Image (cartoon, rainbow, N blue to C red; front, side):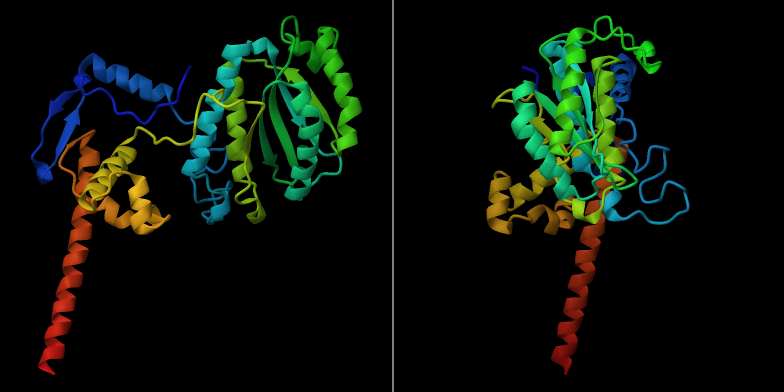
Length: 349
């Protein structure tokens, strides 16, 4: 069983430790083959296409696609939760390809003939289709719903079929509308969807084999999350983007409950540990009991200000940690000084 575990720290034995007394903190410097291997691993784990920005042309988050400098609404900004969801989506699709074979995976697109823009109506129709058709026809389904720039809603699905529909399929010939290379099983699927889709309020449908490798189609589907976020409306907030259908308990290979193995992620986890120990908490359940369910939101500044005396993963992380702690301690000192001055003035009166 494959598990997602990107939050674990790298083995310290592969690092050459270099202690620096600057700012009273320690950091590590990597050198030699271990450093090259680590850099290669980081490069291979680069962000998914279009997942580091709010548009696919490379614009920075916070500006529109036209680079006019106008602020992008918060609803259209890609969050850490979206990136984790896309990461797990890619992992799950690749796991399906390993389990059933890429030839049995089909890429199914469902659109609405009447250009449905109301999310609730689109979800209602999809739920009906899923209940009466999809669950019975395909063993496993991974779906992403997307809102286009026009506002119309449609669905992209990876489905597991009973037969291999990829072997012998000529993608170039199909582009020329020559469908002779399609196997009988795939032709039967096309016929079925032409007849079934209109009954549930859907319009044009398309079911094709996976043309590229498993990783390619996985990342292609994952990029739809970014496309959806930059086009979604305020009423779409909170709606589940990714659906996993037909998976029994224990079949899923990944979970969104993980943290990135980056400098900022390392700082948050270690500062949270220091903060929890200082307040007598053993885990997040204790923090929730003492500080409430939104403890991370209200205590973010105090957590990031916690002092940690450990070897940091990089010099920049060490300096960032020092700056956060020093800034908070300075603010506390200024507040105490103002309070004492206020007490002195009140006493003099």
